[in-house]
Amino acid sequence: MACLYCGASKLRLSRFRREDLFRLLLLELPVRCRLCGKRAYANLLTAWKIGRDDKARHRAQRQRKTQEASRDGR
Image (cartoon, rainbow, N blue to C red; front, side):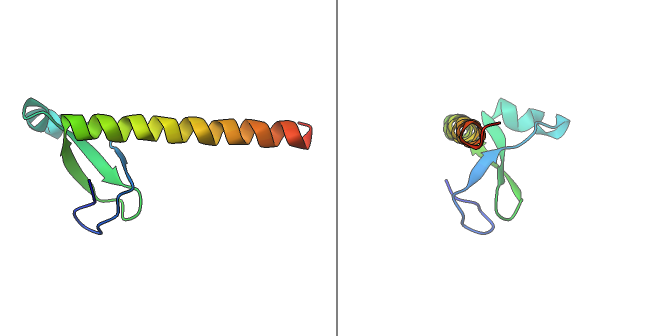
């Protein structure tokens, strides 16, 4: 899925708002573009994949920081 506004494929799950309840009934979750910051909706399966990829990216960043800290002697 790409951002509807800028076309970037760097999306993440957005925080859930009360206004999103109707969209949830339609099996859509809010996503946000990492580049332009605009908010849109993705179907449940696509949003789940975005969330899964986002968690993997976060885990890799944390692991890199830990490795750098151990290399620096911290």
